[in-house]
Length: 169
Image (cartoon, rainbow, N blue to C red; front, side):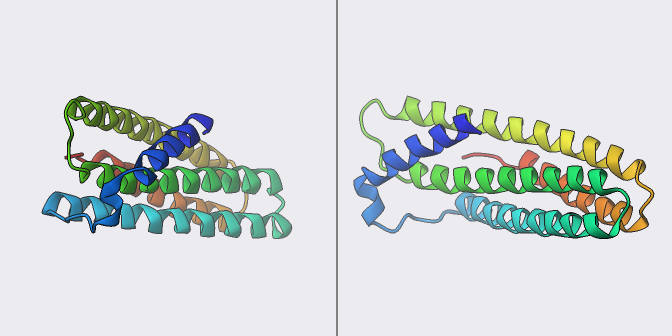
């Protein structure tokens, strides 16, 4: 996540120094769909936090304390990934609206490729979370943990499909 933090810090620095920030960015239809995806990712991030809280609460009432905590850890990590993807998409939307100067267009293309690579990495990490959650839920003796893990796996799969559907303009 340190690399993601550096990437976000560089993007924020570019945005803060940009004169285009003082203007309201236009919202063409592709940016509206990007805004919708950002909103959905933010909502998923909060859902994963709720899942993490649920699994943390189950630890006190279940003999499967360790399994519950492993799933809670995956839920927190998934929340972080959804939040990071959401922030990167917002920053990309603002960068896309900065008027191009001479020689800047190739930089936008490289930022687009970099962001697409990050999103692909997030998809891979979320797929691993599905596998881990599936393993832990399959080996638990608590119906409460298994049922909650199924709901979380559904949210993970929806988030993966959402990330796969992103087409950067």
